[in-house]
Amino acid sequence: MPITIKQMRYALAVARAGHFGRAAEASAVSQPALSQQILALEELCGTALFDRTKSGVRLTPFGREFITLAEAAVETADKLNNFALRHGGRPDRPLRFGLIPTVAPYLLPQVFPALIRDLPDMRFAISEGRTETLLAGLEDGSLDIALIATEPPRTGPRLVTAPLFADAFVLATPRSETSDTPVSLTEIPPERILLLDEGHCFRDQSIAACRLDGDRNSRTFAATSLSTIVQFVANGQGVTLLPEIAVDKESSDPRIAIHRLNDPAAGRQLRLVWREATPYGRIFEQIAGIVRSTRDEELAQPA
Image (cartoon, rainbow, N blue to C red; front, top):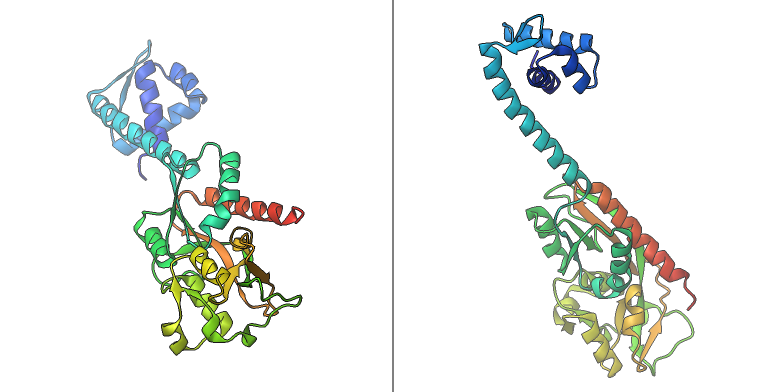
């Protein structure tokens, strides 16, 4: 049976107090319970730690060496406990939060103030990156949490996924192309559809929603941001899909018209992901809840 931290603490208390009764009082335990633990400890050691006298106790030569080692062991245990408690609650550094570019500029203006309000003792280091970059950051530890719009891969570190909300797609066209009814994506000529460049998950989701073939993938117009594509649409260069969260920001140009789709599967699911082996899981669940509630509050506001 190994020596326990509790037994070492009791031995330290007796060594400091020089008396079993006072040591028991300082340890908030009964004297018989403390004495029993000391006797068990001495039995494990095979020798006495203390010489008992009428006036109190004093350390034996073995006891002095034992107490020196016990002090170091208990101090290390306390440091480890404090480390675990501190990091199991709140990180003592900014939380590294990555978002994909087709989410960050549209969601952060509402979500970030809510995070600061509801988690006032937290600091955040926000960054943008494509999905593969964010997942690599989670794997190498340069990111703590990421907001993505695809299912995380089954390879690599085990990730926890917290679904946030569904983000439907809409169609942005020049203002001249108005319609009072939902638009079918199958009726749009493929050559008119403007997409993001390679590597954006929103590009892949748009290609799937519009049922574009492989040859079309390699020949289509490509831009680095949704804002750039919308400018081309406003100038009559084509049409594009937009995620619903981007509509307020990207449809402010009066030359743009927004059309609902009659393709219910055209959309994406936003989710937070983080490594399963993290001490901040509870915080990340709180963040997911804040994102959801912020989105619900926004949708509840009158148009």
